[in-house]
Structures are given as C-alpha cells and as structure tokens.
Image 1 (cartoon, one colour):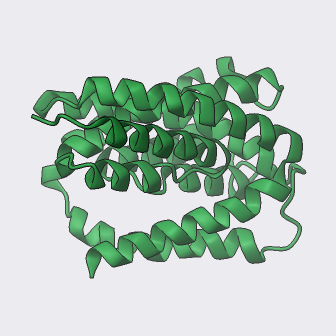
Image 2: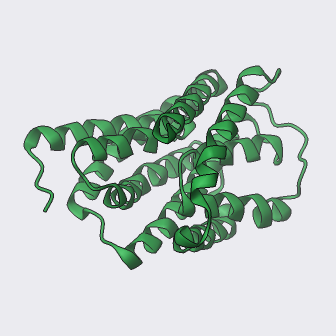
Image 3: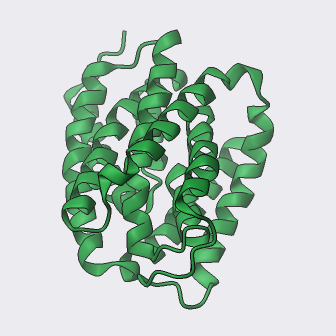
Length: 252
C-alpha cells in the first residue's frame, strides 16, 4: 500500500500546483505530475489513473475561468465535449488492442512540429483568422480524434487541441486556449472512467493534488486572460518541446 510521508505529499501538491498553472495556459501539465507521482513511488499504471483524477480539477477550473472572462461559451461546447468524453473512453478501452509503442515513437515528432509551428509561423496572435472547417465538421473529426488519443496515451492532448483550433477553426491563441479546456476536461473524465474498469487510482492523493491544481489553474488562466498570446505562445513552445524530449528519453 502506498503510504506517503508528509514531505512526499507536499512535493506532490507543489507539482500539482505548478502543473495546473502551466496546463491552464499551454497544456502539458501531465509532464510534471506523472513523473512526480512516479518519483513518489506510485506504480506506473496507478500513476496514470491518479493523474487523470487530479487533472480534472485544473482543466475544469481553467474552463470556468476562461468562460467568465468571455473567451469561450461553455454551453456551445457541450456537444463536442460529449464526443471528446466518448472518444477518450473508447481510447482507454483500446489500449491493449492498438500499437501504442509505435504511436510513442511518432509522438515526439508531432510535438516538435507543434512547437515549430507556434514558434515560427508569422502573425500568430490573439486575432481570429479564416475558418477552414465549419464548427460541426470540426467537432465530428478533430475533437473525437484527439479525445481518443487522450484516452489511449495522453501526453500533449492540450497542444493537439490548440493546434487544431488555431489551424482549422481559425481561432486566435487566447481563444484557442480557452476552447481546449472543457474538451480536455471531458476527455480526462472519459479516460478516467476507462481506467476505473480495470484499476483504482489513489483517490486521496488524486483529490488532494486536484485542490492544488485548482489553485494553479485559477492563477494561470487569469494571467493568460490578461496577457494572451505573449504568454501562451512561448509557454506552449516550451511545454511541447519538453514533452518531446521527455518522451524521447523514455523511449531510449
């Protein structure tokens, strides 16, 4: 049984707070919390499930905060959120049936490509641009695809949603960030439900880290709402690159 010391609990809470702050702005919070749980001695699969528990709080708080600031209408996102939830549940249940090892090799390339896109593409700011896909088509294609990936593996889900909203939906950086959060919350719920079918997370640790995530996400989303692309872009580039390097290190 996992019985953490006071020092380990404080370490996990600090990691969750930082993850909530970073994830609310650019995604990639799992890059902080999953290694923290593993360092604390939590078994890998249990760490993934526990990470989904605490991640719900950060994504949920960020979604509410961005909605309060007027950057997203959560009611209009309910149908896409249901699709994200269902796809993530299906992804979590498909882990043993699909070549996840192959996907892990491709992921770092995709994350580096996302970092380069946001770092080098000129003119990316908080201004909306031409929409390449109607909202219904976007919701029926990119949303379930990324939700499925979140249930299957997870790292970089926020970055993938961000890229889709900027490149396909034509959203500015801040608006795209705001629109990712409810969908990421829904995919976290779906993935967690899939995990619960086969194992149990560490509920007390997950809920405690969730409280710290709330605080971090509240601070991060408020800051992003005020500063916008000038904060979000560099943090997204950093988070995507760091995730790619972490995945490469794990593979090698």
